[in-house]
Length: 183
DNA sequence: ATGGGGATCGTCT
DNA sequence: GACGATCCCCATC
View (cartoon, rainbow, N blue to C red):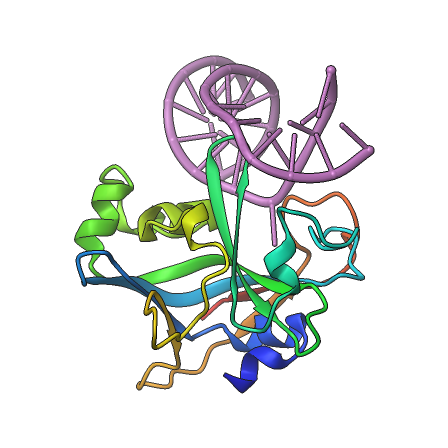
């Protein structure tokens, strides 16, 4: 996917409105429309990749379309999509989606919380979609090992996108690399 | 409506 | 040995 080869801030903005789908072990599909993202690059002090390649962040230095999943706060998983065309350690954090597929399963995993709270946070959506460390390093739209699918929905709706400061970081807070669909 | 704190552990200093 | 790209509960206003 050519889109993902661009720089992370460009990709982060353009991914708003794309549909992210996960193929479950039983063959069913979960997922939704991406409504909030954040960009991280190696030059950016807030990024896991800033200080170079380590065991945790190594897949961030892989090719565009690889999934980078990290564990945080002792209990949460968050997912990124690697971007760029130089293996330079950039990625887009998926912060929220609007659920479209298999709400029942996602609801079950999220302890029967109301629909509006199902996938409105980076760790929430990973819980709802069943994404964990075992997904780290998988590739999007991989025909040989189908797990993550990213596509533009047929009803090409246009979104108003707001860019703001990123959430929960202490360094390089000035960058306006959080993108939110405001409708 | 808003804010403080607890849960919990892999990764890096 | 400290802390985090978080979430949720409960307290207080």
